[in-house]
Image (cartoon, rainbow, N blue to C red; front, side):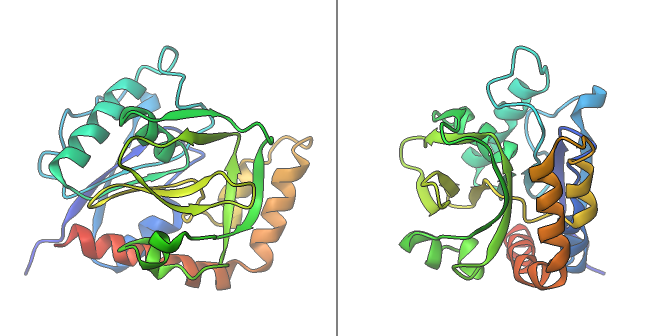
Length: 233
């Protein structure tokens, strides 16, 4: 029997798990080793035997390396992965960490937090891209972010823009991507982000997602399937 490829998943917080992406990757024939870095788990310098890397989201910011000891090693691993041409996907904070690691800039969104479903608005590159091309323009995607990629690294391609004009997705290398949205979530995960009753926008996002979750998951799963195909190459 052919051995299934394995990828490394860097998970900054328990409240931001691999979620549905893990289910879909397993369905597509890829296994995941999750590294919970806030528990003090050591990060490798390179992927080693892993065939790809995913870096998940978290409530901290990409510029918080002084307070988050795992961030600098994670950014080093991202740089090494992209340089090696191995598949990489950064989700929300993971996208922002890749932006900073590769020479770009992340700042607080001057327009305020973006929370809830927003349409996927691909650029011409995003429409035909190897990964994001499987996501139809106009598909609702779940945003939950205060920060944005204010300046992408030199040579990086913007693949989509949110309605406020901020970067929605980017291609950092031949097989390296970042998405500012969350294609991995379900209503349970987003509901966990809304534990504070004052978080009215997060509660609204949970209701929005729950109302059309099955349809959205059918639209988002091809991203995981395509990434799995790239891992298997």
